[in-house]
Length: 116
Image (cartoon, rainbow, N blue to C red; front, side, top):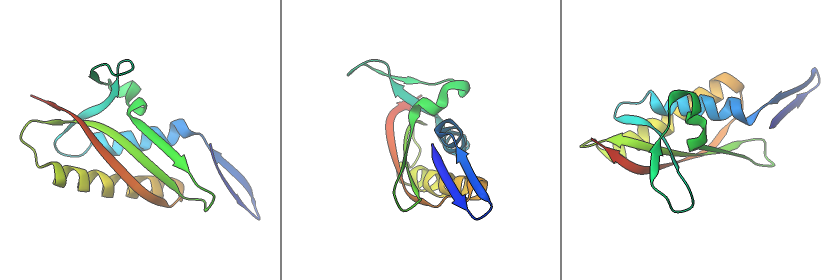
C-alpha cells in the first residue's frame, strides 16, 4: 500500500491498483503477448489471463515516496527485445505517474518467455 499525505488529508492506494495499471500498460505495448508468472518453484512460465496479469508485476515503494516496478512478460517471436522493453518502461512509468501522481524511480522488464 502506498500512502500520500498532505495538508488536506491522506490517500492510500492499494498495491493491486498499482500492479493492474502497470500490467495494463505493459500488455498494451506492441510485441507483448501478456504478463507471465512461474507456475511453481522452478516450474515453467505461464501466460496469465487479463484478469490475473497483476501476478506478473511486483511493486516496491521506498522511503522517498517513489515506487519501482518489476514486470515479467512474454513476447511475440521475432520482436526486438530492446525496443519492447524501452516501450514498456516508458509507458508503465507514464501511466502510473499520470494516474496516481507517484513518481516511478525505475522499471525492470524481464522477458521470461517467447510465444509463437
